[in-house]
Structure formats: C-alpha cells, structure tokens
Length: 225
Image: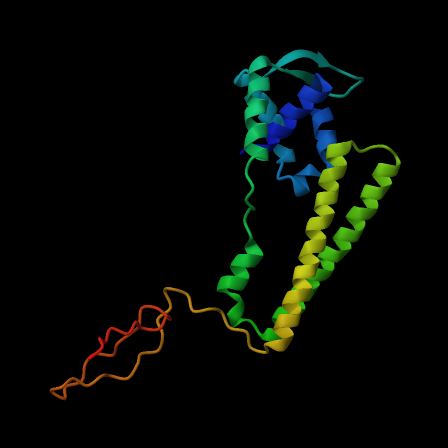
C-alpha cells in the first residue's frame, strides 16, 4: 500500500489546495515518516506521479521573493475515489507488520551468549520505556494546547500503549530467561533428531536407524487376544 499517497491525498481532501512544501511540513510536524511508514522524501515525486494519473491537478503556482515557484495541487474526483480505496485498505486489515525481533529470537538467538542476549534485550526494553514516557508527555502537552483532534490523540495514545505493552513483554521474557540459564529453541519440523539405535529383525540383521517423523507418541496398533 502506498502510504505516502494516502497521506498526501488525505491532506488535500481535508485542508484544500496545498503545495508540496505545506504537505511536507505537516509530515515533518507529525513525524509520520517514523511511525506511519510514509516516505516523506518521495512526497514531491508522488505528487507529480499522481498529477500524471489525474488524481491531483495543478491549479496555480506561487512565488514568494526569491524562493522557487511552488506548485499548488488540488485533489480531483478520481483522487477522491483513490483516497477512499486507500483508506479502506489501511483501516480494514487487523494483522501486524514485519517483526525483526521475532525472526531473530526464533531462528538466531540460540547462538548468542545468554548473558549478552539479556543485556541486549534489556537495552531495547529501556529505549522503549523512555519513548513511552516521552510520547505520553507530548500527548499531554499537545492535548492541553488544543492541537489534537479526536483521531490524532487516539493514535498517539495507541502508540503509548504499544510501547508500554512491549516493556511489559520484555520484563516477562527477562524473568523467563533468568530462570532458564541456557534457553533452547523448540524442535522445528526440518530439524533432524539424533538417530535412534538400530533395531534387530528376526533374522538378526540390523535395520537402518528409525527416525521418528514427529515428537508425538506412536499409536498402539496391537489388538486384544
């Protein structure tokens, strides 16, 4: 999904005609590039691309002093339809995005020194806690000044809650690691267990080692006499 396009079209629909610098300034003020996945640096290119597709149109240029002329864009009817489509795509999904930490702990943490792993995770936990406190303070400040609408305040509160939940998860994991000096990963489906001793047939010849295909106990196939 093109979140840069969603942000730009939403801004034009809400505030009316804007030039690229105004949209860029709003993106910087809200820091949407950090938490929203918007490519702020690609904003001007995206505006030109949308103009070529008929989603926005130039209504005038503005020039102040010696500054370069700025193109003022307005959203079109097709742009309104594209905005509606992008908005629905963004709101409906309930899943989560990529999880680098989850991948690292699942597939690569076992090779780390346990103490080093705990130190690394604690450092991440402390950064999250600091961010949660700072974000909560900023939310209070902006709310007191009346700068936030209902949705903006709710999104910032959501961010605070996400960070606080991560901190709690880190505390729980650290307690588990403290009680498990050498944590090991679970047996994955493609990990071959150690071979079992050979079985002997009635003729006395040794069979090839039997490797179980799952960790579940074998079913009892004997019948009653």
